[in-house]
View 1 (cartoon, helix red, strand yellow):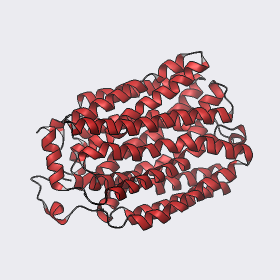
View 2 (cartoon, one colour):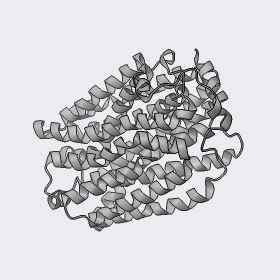
View 3 (cartoon, rainbow, N blue to C red):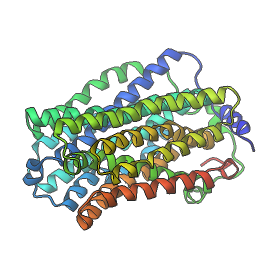
View 4 (cartoon, rainbow, N blue to C red):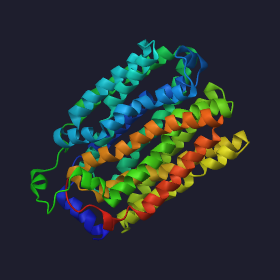
Length: 427
């Protein structure tokens, strides 16, 4: 079956809403803003862990720093598939609203912790709350945007996941310098409550569940979740997603410390270069999704277009090893920006590729599976980085590991994520 047939099949299954186009893009803005809030709450801990005061308060070793960085992802990863089931079953609006309320409260409560056990607990609670964010967002996009608009929609949404650490790191650094780490966690946590007002007011009237006709369509064969996970496309997507997010979460959790400890930047300088790295990634994510949409509108094969953009993004990200091996601070900083910005070319397209190849009625669960792989990277990257740094005493080995995973991602998308291997039946 060719790509046009796949697109036609998915469009027949569920036709995205055609009316209220301006409103749909407003909701994309809200989803992106929620992603910014989420990443503010998950990346602020990395800034705190780059300061001697915070490390001393909890008597943290290098492995201890990695453990705290990864604690968010323990529950976050485990709950991705259940969260996908929730939005497939109950829709997006109210489950997402309750989740934002929960994770913002948990994030703000970090200001009151006094022991390492309490710190790890609140990070786990933040992870529980945020577990629904990605499956909910991708399900809403899949049900309300057609294939040739989906790349831009996902790209704009994904800018929030990059703007979050881009602005969150300098904001957190500023709050730490001018106030304290407790004030920083409190203010960042409670700021998210304001998002709930427009979300509750503006999201009525948009599709959250498949139409009755789509749900009633028979499937020639029903696959178990186990059988789905053995599908070659899904396996390749899981490997590629892990590789992509391993590098991203290395940057989210350890790049502030890398800038201050290896490149000897001040906190304010660290915040600036983190902003440019993730800001560049956000910009390229939106442009990359738009560029792929344009090619598809002009008759390009959706699977081939999005695969090529994804592989190109991984390849550019591999240049991070040049910066890691350089003795020049300016070269290292330049490639920290180039590598993350380049990876933005893959950001919208590797997610949109999944939506092209997977039936819409299962997209919440499949997004959960894919984001579970991403979240496992969030557990492994900070822990493995901490272990490598403690064993070697430098950041070269951790950044070489990022390079190896990125190459694995290129191979996975090249050899495994092919349309002829895509699942043909519903979950």
